[in-house]
Length: 443
Image (cartoon, rainbow, N blue to C red):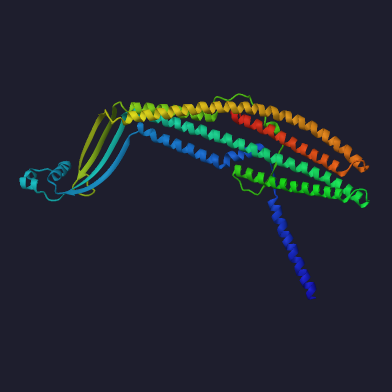
């Protein structure tokens, strides 16, 4: 009874462990079919790089709003409580409170006043009128904001390209698994025939060992390919900003990767970002030059003075217009303009360099695309020939006319040609996606 009890307990534990492991495997191997457009949409919404670029754009827009001070007035309200026995200030407090009497002109009282309090409520207004340098700074800030918008757009285009590349890699990995599964079936079939012949004494043991080694090799490659599916899916999850652990199954729709116009779009977002930065630099240089001009501003104040706290007895106002002109600043403005000009020239050179580099890369991409398309046609023909050769050799092998190594070699060649075709198709689509990214024609 005790033995049966322990056997039942051990069996229960084993079943529970298998159930737990099955649930874990099922959770890890959950498969979700997803299209390329869905991946791109999710990535553009959740990708961290896109979010950071959007934050930079928002910060630039906020800085631009700060330049509204060039038009809007500045208003300040203050309340001050003071007390003094300084003769000049004490007499001034009484003047502001409008409480001066004849007795206050007593020389002893004027020279030795007692502590005199003053409570002031003051409203101050400053209104910019003509500040040409600030006006150009405002225009430069607007250009900076536009520049970050173009940078955000280019970031989205780059993330789109990265998603396309990752999606194609995942599709290639699935094709590799399919090819290796077919190769495994073929190799296992050869192993079965070889084992039967070995049992009948028609082949040597070395032939059987060769087929068994080949089966193990294909099984190992197949296991690695399946692991690569998980790796590619995790990278796709990273791009989309979602949790990893989901195995994505691709929708093989290569119509998305159409041929581009083959011409570089002059309004490509990164080109426009750099051009806008150059324009912003020009405006900053102009703002520095305008700082030599006079500035015209209006100001005003209204205040209430009283000798008692929270008293608002006497009132007074002050208003005026100020024309100021910084004639010489120790060549600081001149050197600033020189530095800004050099930085602007550097941006111009960088834009030309980037455009020339893009032209070179696009020309290379055109050649790569032509080579990849030609390779696809060659691999399709090679697969047809290898498949026919394998069919003939298998028939002859069943008749004992060829050895095992010949069949294994052709089976291996067929699998290699099929993998090469999948790689060539991947290269065609990958090159098309990169061509769209270079020309700025990606949707």
